[in-house]
Image (cartoon, rainbow, N blue to C red; front, side):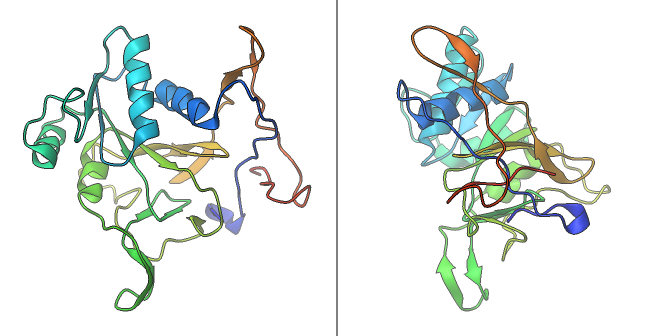
Length: 232
């Protein structure tokens, strides 16, 4: 599980209710759109449909802001040279929000895109780091997302660090993580303490046209199969 300082295990909080009027993917897109905020430019890499939907939702709500660059799309980007142009734009400080995921993510926001087990003889091989470490360093707001909230994906310590969540104080790093969102919970990253903490609860539509708080209810450990115990 994700483990911060003091060796206290923390596991997020479970989604205790389901609303059939919309899908969980729509809720995730709505929450991510709020995290994007008033950014000027949000970029989305490959195989990220929910962050892409969230960025376009934020653009619709912001009346054209942020500008959305969707890698691989002909309609939703101004890039003509693919990933190389994306990296150039990020290095120039012209991308405010980016999204990263990983086969493993730990409580210090390190991500693993290489594999598990011994590096020379991995038990599982992930797709590769690509430009994740570079984007993690230069983009001011990086949102981590993982749709599988399990013990094999959210770990105490990643087997291999493809991109570190934090850096020493003498390292120039304008970018880094601001949040982690999964299919079960939402965390903010505290850069001063170098660990995740809980975010305010999001809202979701309930019934016809009404709004009420969507409760990420805290349940004691062992309350039921698949439940996630709360943060201390």
